[in-house]
Length: 413
Image 1 (cartoon, rainbow, N blue to C red):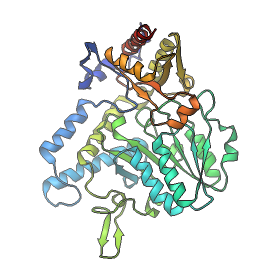
Image 2 (tube, helix red, strand yellow):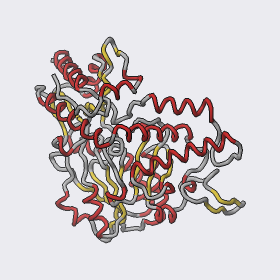
Image 3 (cartoon, rainbow, N blue to C red):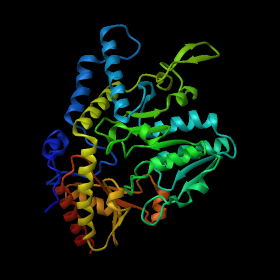
Image 4 (cartoon, helix red, strand yellow):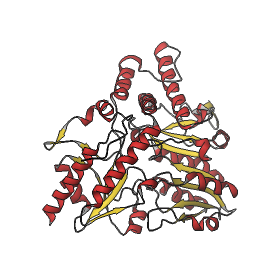
């Protein structure tokens, strides 16, 4: 039936850690294949957040009483865990936000509006999620900067043969996704970052799909900013992270104003707090940050290399199974250059109809433009169905997906 996952990767034990997976949908076992949109949460994370609200709930950084000090310590421990997880040099480089989108907006508005001038260039790619496209459109319109794009070739990879022409002394920032949420393409960030540095450009990486799935070290990549979300990496919704090089963050003006981000306030002027608090206005998502810290613990205990290896084996199996379905178009590069994301279409069947039929078979996939409308136009596909995998996905769930697609073909002829 299946290609086996490496024996050191205990898939059965991992699945036991995720309570939501052990249920039926429409009379079928749940096959959750939408982890690119949002991952499921292990009991460790759920319990940690419940424990905070039951025993430690208080605001942070403000109280001198025991509960507040305990809450502050727990949140700062989470910050330290995240710093180690991505290879940050300092915990002060870890800014808690709501999600990847807010992290990118923070850089776009705090760094972009302060540093971009008419004629400056921002280099993006044609495969960007709207979250790494729209903020730069807004800032370009406000500053007079220009947007340029690294094209996507017919295999779903970035066409880098013209990179030297796109990168000039006018290029001030390169912003790109580490892994496409539509094609699964894993981009050569280290190579692109090195080229950007040759012309003095900063590099921002959308790590929403990479940080959860394989090792990411900001120092090794040679980048300046990294944005990612908790809910895609076994953590809760409502919390994300911006990592930035400390000198850059120190020089940037605040993004939001209010409590916690100030040092002193007068009626007509204020001064700003130290990092990371300068960018964390108001009461933060305390329980969520703590939950993300425990999610990082969980992922580290499994091993990011092991997760990546298991996902690649599973993706290879899934590609082989899907390619055997007549009338199915699969988008994206070879397995060696992609993560566990498979976008596809069935001839003559809209992606939303495919997803609806699969749901009746207990299979949860995403259908639509996946917040990548320009990329979908390049693919000449108004929508695709997308199956995405994580450390808890099984080969049997891939088989369930294939049976659902055959059912879909039978229904629509």
